[in-house]
Image (cartoon, rainbow, N blue to C red; front, side, top):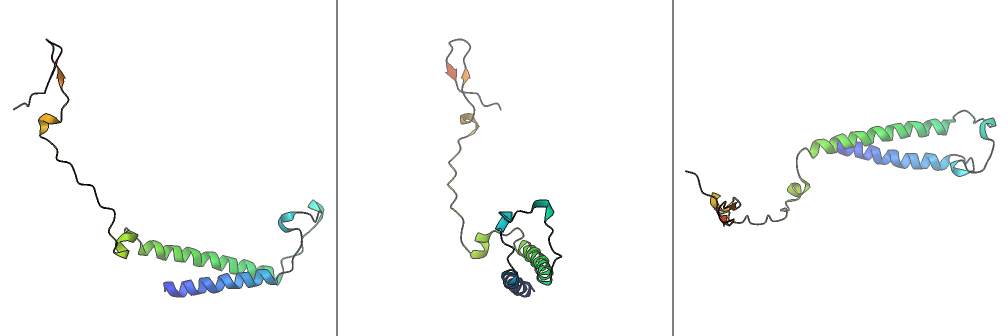
Length: 121
C-alpha cells in the first residue's frame, strides 16, 4: 500500500510541475512591477488553475499519508536497531567504594581537623 501511495505521490509531483509550466506567465514575478494595485482585477480561475489546485490538494494528502505510514513503521524503533549497527560503547562504570567513602569528611569540633564519618550500625 505504501508503494502505491509513493508512486501516486511521484506522479502528482511531475504533473504539478508540468501544469505549472504550461500556464501563461502573468509577468512581474512575486508581484514586482506590473502596477495596477487595487484597481486591477484578476480574471476568473481558468482550467489550468483549477487543475493545479486539485493536484496540489492531492499532493498534500499523499504527503500526509506517507508521513502516517512512516510514523507507524518507526514506532519506538531506533534507526540503528533496524540497520543492525551497535550504538556507541558505554564507558565502564568505576568501582564505587563502600558507604564510608561516599560521605564528605566532618569537621572535628575540638581541634578543627577533619574526621571521616562514622558508619552507623
